[in-house]
Image 1 (cartoon, rainbow, N blue to C red):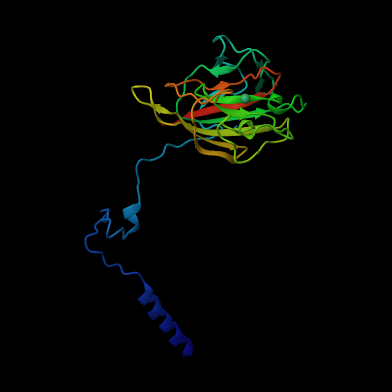
Image 2: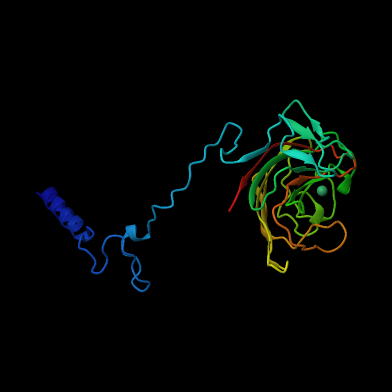
Length: 264
Ligand code: MG
């Protein structure tokens, strides 16, 4: 008897707590509520278009909407940045390439604007040089703005020129390098600068960099070209290549698995 009373009491409470199915006045279907009222139904804040395109990722982690710039097979997407002739760097049998000293930078044949860029790089396990002369290379967005590549393991240098720096402009939040000789990843999200008709910069480029998955640059506003000597320059430009640096001091830096997704 006592149990029956308890069940009845619980049922009464449960029915009393059930949300009212009564329609709210003035809110029909997907009508968006006014700012003052605010949404009162979940459907009012749900979108069903546009539907994001499906992206498949292959076994190497490459999205199927990416442009593969280097998969280890050839230098088809690249040329010498010195004279636009064929690349002189080493094409290795393990799917990587290595800087051939003093043959000059290389750059993509295509020009880019806003991109998501993935690449992997490795400094040699056999250490040579120190400071800026230890496995120095770099990734230049739009042929102008350098994300530093350097073997910084037990190797001191100026912090706005260390690995992951936006050269001479932005110190990375962390030093996330793998041991010398191991592969590192850079994942870069870059938005190009904008210029008006008179050639005056109206919007700075921005860059976000993850080094081995660690955030080291977060939407940094690039001040202009990344100069070795002098202040950044802001000459107007449009689409431009991605360039990889030959520092001309036997860096022996290698790259592999380079792909890019063009962003709006
Ligand atoms: Mg460099």
